[in-house]
Image (cartoon, rainbow, N blue to C red; front, side, top):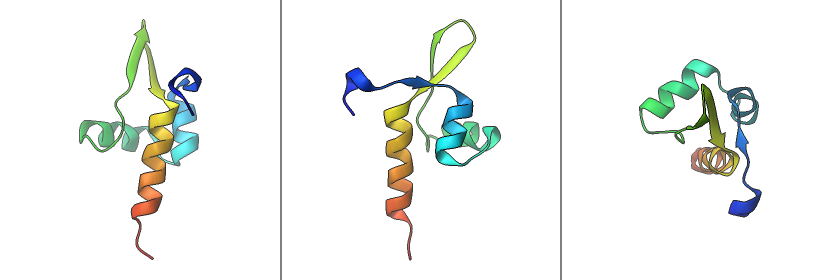
Amino acid sequence: MSDEDDRLIDLPRVKEIVGLGKTMVYRLVREGRFPKPCKPGGAATRWSETEVRAWKACVLADRSD
């Protein structure tokens, strides 16, 4: 996915992609272990879909069998 195709996604979509709840997502962000969200305007909080999917791919790649 190129930068031009990257979408900003909301928390419900992030949770759906990574399978984590709101509390865990924000905990991992605070710990620097999950992509930081951006604030495109007002109270809206969004994440880069590319970054979220890359994070998930890394987690899956790092697991031990």
